[in-house]
Length: 93
Image (cartoon, rainbow, N blue to C red; front, side, top):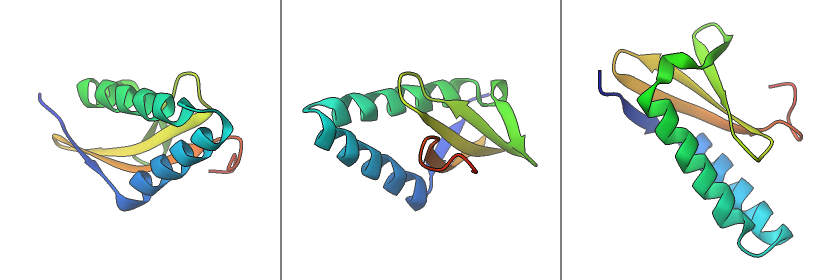
């Protein structure tokens, strides 16, 4: 089955905030962060049911090299990216 990703405004904002933060820490690091997020989203699109369930029907995928997780819900062939969390800043989520 071919899956379609839909990214919420909140998730897009999470990514932008993360990229801006990392760019402020080191030149080019925000770009690397965005690239790793994009790669993780590609992996989610390829195999959305392979990730662990966080709660109810919400799944999460750990982002490599950065302390982030991507939360999403699968409905048929649609994958709804709901949030992209920094686990160091918001460990409760």
